[in-house]
Each structure stands twice: as C-alpha cells, then as structure tokens.
Length: 303
Length: 261
Ligand SMILES: Nc1ncnc2c1ncn2[C@@H]1O[C@H](COP(=O)(O)OP(=O)(O)OP(=O)(O)O)[C@@H](O)[C@H]1O
Ligand SMILES: [Mg+2]
Image (cartoon, rainbow over all chains, first blue to last red; front, top):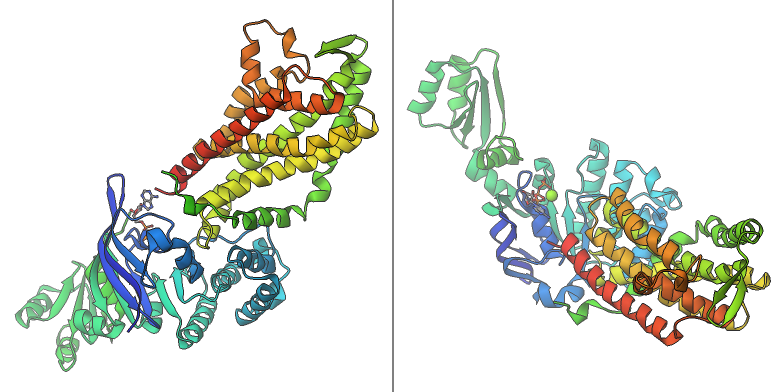
C-alpha cells in the first residue's frame, strides 16, 4: 500500500515543554485515520507540523513520500486542512471565502467558481453563498471550513476537531459528508474528542497522551483488547463485591465510589453480580472506545 | 536564516484578497484623501496666512499654504501605510486568524507579510493619487511633473508599511501601538519639514529630522510638485528604498519569531 503519511520519532519542543515526544505512525492511501488524545496531548501541534506551519524539533515527517522541510509547497498543494479554530475570513462572503482561497492555490477563476458551487451544494450552503461569514451558525461555519479545505481537491484531508461545538443534528450531517468523502477514496487524518465519531469513521487510530502514542489499532480491536465486551458500572460498591471481583480476577477500575468492570466475551460474571450484589445502582452496557480512552489516559482533568 | 524558496509571485494572491475586501468599503475610504487636503488648505490658508508671511524653502519664497500642500501628500502616504500594517494587519493576524488560514495553502509566511506591506503601499498610492488630483486642481501641485509622486507614493508606502509590519511583529497587544505612534509617528509628523522647514530647527536636531523617512518623502513630494527641495532627490529616494528593505527584513524576522515557534 502507498504510504501517504509517515511520521517517525517526531519531536516538538516548546521551550521546556515536549508537546510531541517521539511520535510515530503512518497512514495509508484511502485510510481514515484517527489521532485521539486528551486536551494538550499534542494533536494540534502534530497537525501543524504536518502542513508545514511548525518546524519539527527532531524526527522525520514524510507526506506523499516527500519531506516537509524541502517540499512544503508541493505538499501543501495536495493537502486540505480544516483548522480547530475558525479561520474563515470574516471580511469576505461565504462564496468569496472559497473563491479567494482557490486563488491561493492558483486555481483559475472559472474552475474556482465551478468547484465552489459544487462544494456549497454538497455542504448544503448554496442558499448562504452571499451571506457574511459572521451570519453563519456554528454548524454552517464548520461546513464552510470543510468545503474550503476541499477546494484544491486534496489527496490528504486533515481535520482538527471538525465537529466540536456542533449540535447532534449538525454533527451527524458532517459525519455523513465525511463518509461520502471516504467512499471516494480520500485519505483523511481526523482528531476528535467524540469517541462515537472516531468509532464510526476511523479505519484505524492512535491514542496519544503527553505527545506519545499509547495504543494503535482499529476501533473494534482496541475495544476488544482494552475494554472487554461488556461493562458493568456499580455505584457505591460494598466490600463484599470488591472481594468477589478480586477473587475472580475480573478486569476492573476502582474509583472509590464507583466500580467499573470490564467483562470479556463469553464470561457471565455480570449475571452473578446482577443477582447477588446489585440492587438498583448498576448499569450494564456494551464497551465503547470511550472506555478504552479513559482507561488508557486516566480520568483526571487535563491542563 | 532566510530561505529563498519562500518568496514567489504568489504573494499577489494575498494582495488581491485585500483588494477584494477593499472593494466593499472604498466608497467611504476615498472620502478622506478627497476632503482632508481641503480642510488643511482651508484651515492653514485662511487661519494661518495672516500670522505667517512666507516661507523660505530651498531656492524659493513660498506662501505658507504652498509650502505645506505637498507635505500633506507625504503624511497621507505615511498614515495610510502605517495604519494598514499595524492595526489592519494585527487584526487579520491575531483576531481574524486570516494568516493561519492562508498558511495551510501553498503560501509562505514571507509571501503573506510582503503582500501586506505591498497592500498598505497600494492604499498609500490610492490616497496620494486622489490628493494629487485635488491639489493639482487647486494649483498647489505642478502637473504633469506631479504625476511622478504616484510611484514615489508607492516607495514611501512600502517604507512605512514595512516599519508598521515590524511593529506588528513585536507588539504584544493592539493597544500597544500607541507607543510607536507616540514615540515615532507623532514626532515624525511634526518635525519632518512638514509644517516648517527643517532648516528652521536648531543645528543639533537637524540630523535627527533627516533620519525620518517622512522628511525624505516630503522632500520628494515638494521636488515634484513645486520644483525645489533641500536634499537631492536621489538621496531621498535611496534612503526610502533602503528603509523599506531594512524594515521588511526585520518585519519578516519578527513575524516568523512571533507566529512560528
Ligand atoms: N505555540 C506554543 N507555545 C508553547 N506551548 C504550546 C504552543 N502550542 C501548544 N503548546 C503546548 O503544547 C501542548 C500540546 O498542545 P496541542 O494544542 O497540540 O494539544 P491538543 O492535543 O491539540 O489539545 P486540544 O485537544 O485541547 O486541542 C499543550 O501543553 C500546549 O499548551
Ligand atoms: Mg488541538
């Protein structure tokens, strides 16, 4: 498979702080790849190095098989970036945002108009094409940033938290659009704090913390490996239950006032627990990527 | 270290972006250069002419209004370029994150900065051209020699745009622009031979005035509108070009340090 992105022992140091610390991963052509991690894990910093905004302190970074330090311009021609912050141009209308951006890529005006009409249509913004950017709702602004990141028909799309701050309707709409793009074979790098989003969209992902990769794999394989099949959450567990869990060697996290059990496929501790130890304060559910994330990165607040 | 591959004609795309934005607001913006010289000429012509007889400048005796009229073009060039690369560029860089958006495209930071400086000079040229027309009609600027002031305004605009951009690169917050305005622009506005000849100043301050880019711009402006000046035009021209190059270099270094850690 052709490697679109090859990150090798990448380091970024800000004064005393190592924001990215020997990060390595690679993304293949056509893959939808997730870069997950808590606040301050170094995701945005990594992305900024990927599109040549920040120079790496050390390590190597190849995009389309080219080195970012020398071939930055050729790489940027073929990459689309959707920033975490709103970087739309508030001095320009919705349509002008796309047209002017197309100019930065030297796309001829006629072609730019065609593409921008197409993208506005695809992201359901045609009725807003003459509106000011300030007049857009959060969801529309996000869709416009997405549209803008596609104006150069990129081979690699980099999305830094594309759905943060959106209501469920807008988020689902964005997911549908991203799935449609994925179906065209576009390679995508996504960061998100929504585990549901990562599970639904990503073929493969890494969870990073403190600038280092903790785990890598497909969402399902990570769930199987780190969070079992089912979860039992017990509020205010008593000592007898804790003893039972320990005696049976059940994977668990003890949060003092709450006990979380990770029950693998084919085991039925949950039935015993349900019958013997649980009154009304138990929750049974399937394991999710969120459980994996919390187990691996801890439950403390960041920053 | 300056790399050469960061400079290309692509900077014109950023310049064009500013033009597209300006097309929405030019109607308001062009009123200032249209009326400002009229206000000054009226105020100084009517109000001052009784107090001040003539001004001895270069090889000529001039009425006071004839003396200050060409300098008004020079100060307009200064204000337009300096405001654009300080307040204007700062808002785009810091509040609007326009540069962040651009930096994801094949543009380099250097191209963006150079484009901002050229854009500010473009605004200077626009203002100078309108003022030239007004002052030409009123007879304060000789035509067609006054038309040379259009390219001169470009060079002056580049010089003031470059130093403004440098301040943008080193100024932490937008209100701090008061400082360079108070310490640099205001004294320059007053002591560059704009409202009285520098030769009227005591000998020991004259060299300081000669270091002001506005002095040289006002000199060039008088040379081409009334045909006389204190300093040889070639010296003023070279000074402004060097000033532009020097501060563009500093601005690029400051912006790179500011935006790219
Ligand atoms: N320009 C900078 N100068 C100094 N420190 C920085 C800079 N940019 C980021 N950092 C620090 O680097 C670390 C990683 O930040 P980064 O923005 O990459 O995190 P993130 O994973 O994107 O977080 P979030 O999920 O909150 O967006 C943080 O501790 C941050 O404070
Ligand atoms: Mg981030």
